[in-house]
Image (cartoon, rainbow, N blue to C red; front, side, top):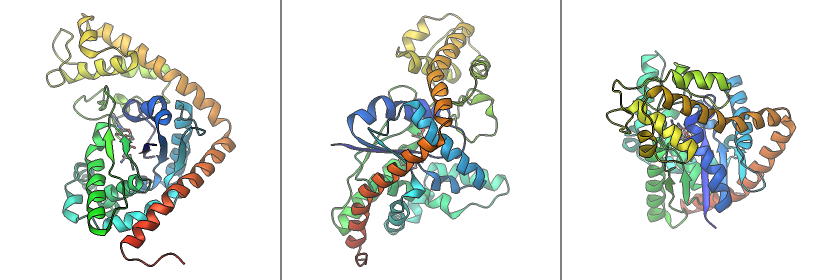
Length: 332
Ligand code: TYM
C-alpha cells in the first residue's frame, strides 16, 4: 500500500492556506487511499525565536484541529514529531549526505534568515538545517507521496535528492518520495498582499484567515481584501492577483472552476460577498468540531500516544537500516 506522510508546524494558528493547501486533502483523499501519517512537526517550530509555552499550546491546538477537520485516528496515524526519536536520529545521518551549498540555496532559508537579521535576531543554525530534518521526517517512513502546498516543493525535492544519493552511496534504504498538490489553492495568498503567501506567522493578521476566526471576522477580512484597480472580474494571476486569489478561494470552496466563476460576476463586491459566505460555510464544521474536541483533552492525549507508538514502529526499522548502511554498529 502507498505510504503518505505530511506535517504541519506549530508556529502560529492554522490558516485557510494550511487547510486548502494541505489539510483538506489529507482528510478527504489521502487518509482513505493510503497508509498515511500526519504529524505536528514541533521540532521545526524551534528554528526561529520561540516561546516554549506557546509552542506547547499551538501543538495541542493544531492536533485538535486536525481531528476536528476530519482526520480519523482509526484510518491514519496522527502524532507529534518530537515524541518519536527517529526523526532526530535520521536527521543527523542525512546531514552527512547533504551539502551546505544545498542548504543555503533553500528559498525559505534565504527569506527567513533575512527577516531574522532585520529584526535584530541571530539566525539559528537549525534554520539552515531545517530541510534536512524535514527530509528525515519523510524518508523515515518509506514515504511515496507528500501532500503539501506549493511552497514546500523545493523541500520535498531535497528529500528526493537525499534519498537517491543515500541509496547510491550506501545501498537501497529509502523510498524516493514525490510532492503532490491540490488542483486549486495550492498557494493561497495574503488578502492584504496578494503577491505574498498567506502565512501563519506574519505580523499583519488582517490578510490572514485563521481556521478558528469567528464567522464575522472571516467575512470582514474577505470583504476588505485588496483587489486590483480594474473593473472587470477576470482570472489572471499576474495582472490581477487579488481577484485571482478570491476566485481560487471560491473555486476551492464550491468545486467550480475559476474562469467560469469570473465570467459569472460583474462586480468585485458580489464576488467578495459570495467568497466570504462560501469560506464561512467551509470552515463552520471545523470550528464547531474543534470546540467539541477541545472539551476532551484526555481524548487527544490518547490519540497522540497511540499515534506516536505506531509511528515509532514504522520508522524504527528504516532508521536502523540507515544506521547500519552507513557503517554504524547495530544498537546494543
Ligand atoms: P507549514 O506548517 O508552513 O504548512 C503546512 C502545510 O500547509 C501548506 N500551506 C499552504 N498551502 C497553500 N497556501 C498557503 N498559503 C499555505 N501555507 C501553508 C504547506 O505547503 C504545508 O503543506 N516544512 C513544512 C512542515 C513539514 C513537513 C514535513 C511537510 C515539516 N516536515 C514533512 C511535509 C512533510 C511547513 O513549514 O509547513
